[in-house]
Length: 286
Image (cartoon, rainbow, N blue to C red; front, side, top):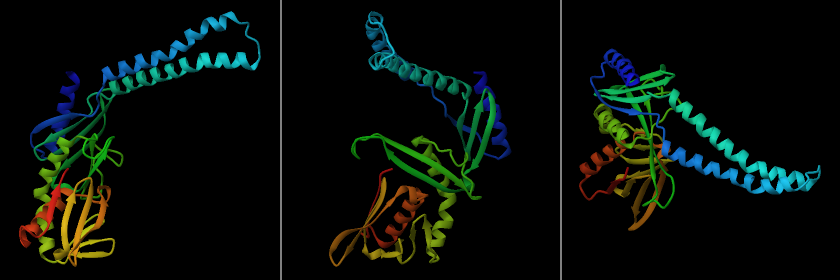
């Protein structure tokens, strides 16, 4: 409770300084999964069973300095050593989590605050106002299984207009709910200049892909809007074309290479509505 009170005071001071409004939600960055760790300790303890199983054999023979005796002793100590190593790692992890307790991402009306603690002291902080956001990378990773049923992890990184990554180069967060809020809150700030640039005939760039009045540009190629058949903004950006009555894939682009996918989708939707509802199919599963 005291740690949360201290965190709230630290965050509110920064929020007042940078005019972020009021606190909406706090997202803890450090979680101790004690049930999972206890299960891991029990599993690691099983590694000691071979030692007790081989102990009578070791005691019944006269160990000599030969290969068979050495291998028997090595086998008896190998599994307990591995189990002890696993237990030590878990305990060290618990200590690390305890020291970093209180670290959090705090969502305010007009931005984010990152607070990282070490032994109840702030060791790092960062502040981000929605109007200062330039790029949002949203990468989707699958842990296992096929595309439809595999566990999905959404990874977010944010860069401000000064070219600095929020939280530092190594910081990212995998909270999909918070990521969607960030995309929603930043869209009103990013949209006016984006649609204005497009309507003026400028090239609007999203990493390796660009949109203009002429069409979609990727890898030095131009696909005119009248040839665009489908655009899928999913785990991979897929663009399909129709030429001479033939339907084919035109490009597949990794989401790692396309920042501001939420803004890209909004601009594609704007362009499609300008051309008519049957212009091309647009899908977003993120």
